Length: 142
Image 1 (cartoon, rainbow, N blue to C red):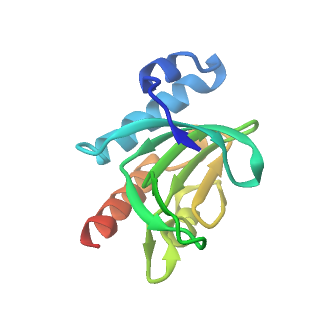
Image 2: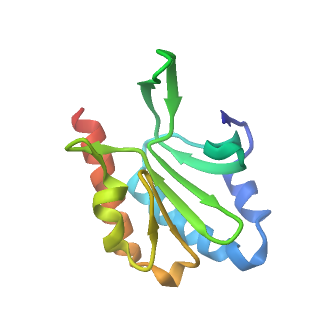
């Protein structure tokens, strides 16, 4: 995946009508927490080889198993084929925050660093905001 120069607002306006309002609401909620951090659109093949477009909030560097340094987003927001996904790439106590706090967000499917749901009304946006706030705090604390 690579960071693009595409404007996030243009990306959101171009989304299908059935997901646009939910994505805009989620973008506004996440942006409010991540204020002051860069927001970029990433595009390309993600894990499993599927093509993705992800709004990335914040950045951090990590070293992959092949020793290559990579810059990645702290929080990501994406439209999948049948659901919306929020990626939270912050770790506390050797576990991803998505794993530990994700189930509290609502009717969701939780992966290592992902929280997926069908529509905005399936989740408690306040709980999602708390999770993103915790990710920011953990990352800033080092």
